[in-house]
Amino acid sequence: AQLLIQARLFEDTPIADALFEVGRLRFEEAARAIMPDGSGLELSLNYHWGFVRKCDEVARHLAAHGPTPDWFTALRPARDAVANFYAALPMPDGALPSIGNLPY
Image 1 (spheres, rainbow, N blue to C red):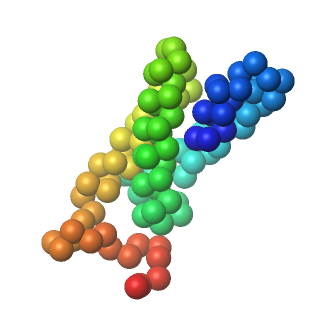
Image 2: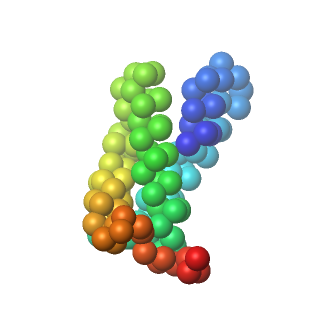
């Protein structure tokens, strides 16, 4: 997310296009690790919730600087699948189960 934002903040510099491209590729790679049900190949709850947060952060930034690129719009189903997956996870006490993490 930071690479995409920095690329826009420093868009007049020679490195801006490269920053943006690396940021785009990292987002697309992260989306490929998300299963159709919203779970992830990493099986780490913190890692995949970070994907939702970063998507939302970048979406706000992109919206403030013009139309949303098609490649980012294509990530929306993965972002929504993760959000729906997390909405179903809390245990009765509100805690998340230890999936892919050592018990505390």
